[in-house]
Image (cartoon, rainbow, N blue to C red; front, side, top):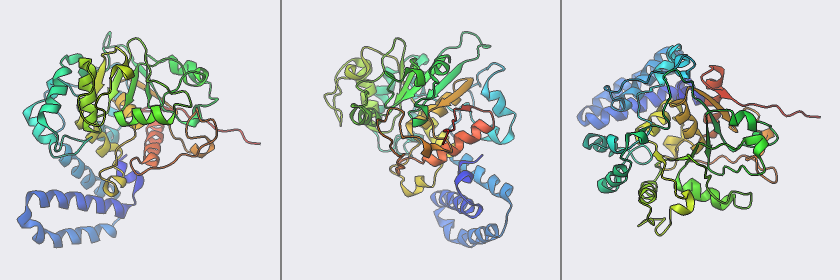
Length: 389
């Protein structure tokens, strides 16, 4: 189920493995790089003539695991889950079991901020790490997320409770779908970006438990979809806001929001967080480890190489992957399906708009991943055919 194998041919995968291993060696053993070149040239040529996908997969996996070997914390016990949990489905499939790592921390808080973690994350840029970020800024923000509850989305009532989550994207497939009641029947509902509900209750439901965003996507949504009805961020009793740390401004906004003060510096200087979140103080923040892990394991697109400073999984993808690592059963609504061109970009579009593919996300790779996980019964993906004629 490798993300690379979803998008690349056998020879392209071999090249990815070659470059990963070679870069890793070069960074550690500069003196050996020239003597290793002939070996790797022979290695590459041999693989171009070979059709052994299993052999390639072994090296591909080794490259990924060498990059992430320090992410898992050995002293964290895997959570006990009920019989209904998707984790049991994952563990029955050897390939899935090797990709899913449920010990990787999903959220960051004061307890995750250590000197060792800071040093390791200094090697990766946002949103995958803290490269070139000020220690005091990160430390101050995470010190405000002081309670261990901020490391979790919710508390289970019992170990046998089956937690069902719906993740609602904004795809046009939901317009006229009549899925509102089914969405609301879930224990928790995730929404993202321009999550317009008024006027679309029958199709998208009314419940919102978690709202995920970056500050950039939040502000862009308020600007781009204002005329469509997205005039403010969802506000409901008990709602929890999930920050994706794509930029330093996300850390600065979280700190200001928790303290109830205007943003002191940066692009959002002077903003009042209460204008966005009201008096709510329930904030969560994805861990850079988690963003790095799900990107490497599931959505390691070629665009990551071509547009290294831009690429990251979409907000919807990160929320869906968050749900898959925290909930027992996950249903996805409003995400791209095979026939996405039959629908408008968003369910609230007043006129039909084609989905635009930008360099910062690989929407097609994401759609392939959802389809695969649906087929493997790890999650359920809402799909719909348009009746023609």
